[in-house]
Amino acid sequence: MAEAANWLDGNALGGELMELFGADLTDAPRRCQSCGATRAVGAHRLHLGAGSVLRCPSCDAVALVLTTLPDRHVVSMAGTWQVPRADLSEDR
Image 1: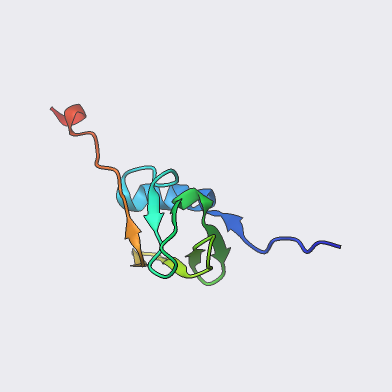
Image 2 (image 1 turned 45 degrees about the horizontal axis):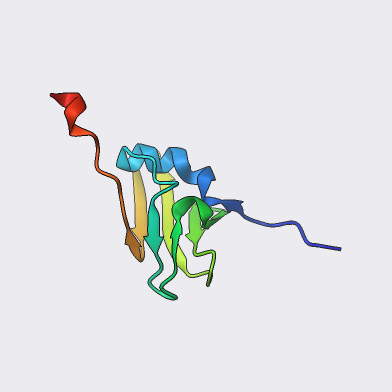
C-alpha cells in the first residue's frame, strides 16, 4: 500500500509569499543551492509544523523557512530566487 504524502506542493504557500513579496512566486524559478536544479517554487514540497518549510523537489534541501508571528514574519531563504518586479507603470 502506498503511503500518503506528508507534504503539500509549494502553491499552498502562494498567499503568504504574495504578502511578503507583493508578487506571485509560485511560477518563479528557484535554483537549488545543493543540487543545482531549477524548478518553479510551486513545484517545491511544503512541510508544515511550527512554521513552513519549503524543500527542493529534487534533493530535499531546505529552500525556505517561514514563521509568522503576530507582529512580523521571520524568513530564511536559500538558493537563487527569481522574484518578479512589480509593474511600475500602474503607479504612474
